[in-house]
Image (cartoon, rainbow, N blue to C red):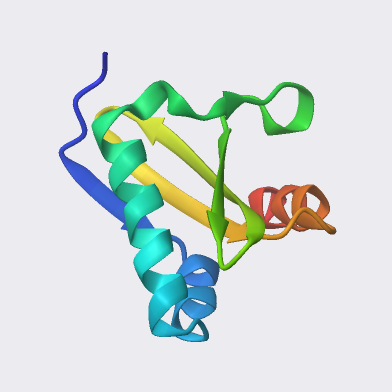
Length: 96
């Protein structure tokens, strides 16, 4: 198992997090903590998104997806959101 020593948020992740309510932020922080404790908890993606993992969690009766990647003990948090257009937006961000 990989030990994580640093967590880095993408600019998109930080902007999205600012717009959330306190309860949603608490749920998101809980999801990040779960990933920190068990880095392989998410589903590994293939194809264009190879290397990226996606963790599903609930916030206020809504399922959200959180995309992240672990590179050399650094946890990169890319984006989160509902399933609608999630992967399309993620691919677009990773190509930039």
